Length: 231
Image: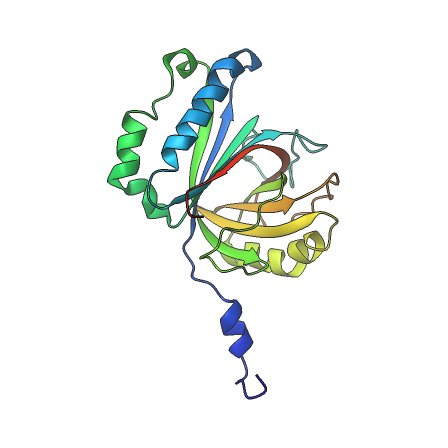
């Protein structure tokens, strides 16, 4: 490869922009777990049949940062506190959620059981992936750990990218147990950063830059993971 032109290696490590993530936070009383957990497992099996949905993972709040923390308490309106459950759906593209197959599932077999309707509170974000470290091709599922350090942060895209590249990622990636970092744009100035972890260690989350908006760190332990056939 001695004759390679400058920048050839960079082109090999780039990937197409546009992978999607459906990010669902849910809260419900512990007493309803007996109904919620079996239903969610059944629903996950059905949703993985939808073309373009690659993986489903469910997490429960855990670790020393379970309560979250505000990056700047004087920032005004804050992001919501971390929810008890976090479910992540890896998508080939956000438009998968607009497909006839997904809409049909959501309207029928995916409907929330009646006994949970009044108990379940949640928020739903449709996100587009912007960067991943290491830069694994979008054609491959990003390596998954058994835990997740999760950041919800507000700010200009350029400011978030600068902070990630210069401060957060260089601090997180060398941490014991760190598998990789992904950054998602959730629209309207909202961003989600996921640091995949493996093993018993919870690294300290980096301080969020002061030129960014409100931020909440939280930690989740993976309770369920299932890939679509062929992934």
